[in-house]
Image 1 (tube, rainbow, N blue to C red):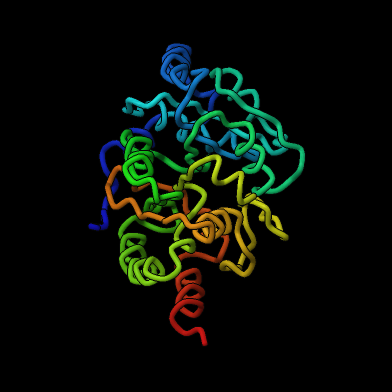
Image 2 (cartoon, rainbow, N blue to C red):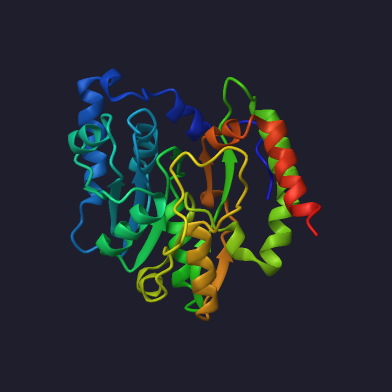
Length: 285
């Protein structure tokens, strides 16, 4: 798949919009709430589940991207608030977005709550610092509906540029990491299944208790750590694979999401993050 050196127009359009609820005009709030109302269906076939912890400064763009969804599937949107202490809940309630409080702290606990609260046959998992193309839901769900042996799907991603790192540098990083991703896809596709862009059959996920891991991840991760412990999203995919299901990579621009680089910056910037991953995947014994 081609790597975008620059951001597509739809991403640029979203980034030009306010990312703080208090900066939105009243008419913008009304229009966004109207678009998001489509996700309040009582009989969804798809549930989009997103955990959130103190995301009042990030989740608005995620919601704006999802509001532009084009799909024929009935979809519910469910945000799991994992003890946010900022204005996350106020923002979600003001926009009419269904949200549930999970008091057990940890990404896995939040995703587990979403797994059991969701109503759809298919679950798509997202993150609150990620932008989703209009065709994302259809592309991901089609990958499961069109092949009953597929229990789990995952898409690809690009990083949003930041003040510290321009887009062209991330494009180069994504080009190099693509070799590692393709290598893992052949033998360990569960390692490519990331919580901000994946999906699975809900009942299959419940059957394998996929999110149950010993060490819970925190929402911002830990600096200098590259998959040292099992992650809840990769564990879900692995258990679905062990249960006899296939993991399918959705190779479409509609399945390529754009996510923040905050984990990269937490690891000390692009150079340090790249060296950590090269050492782990190319020079491991």
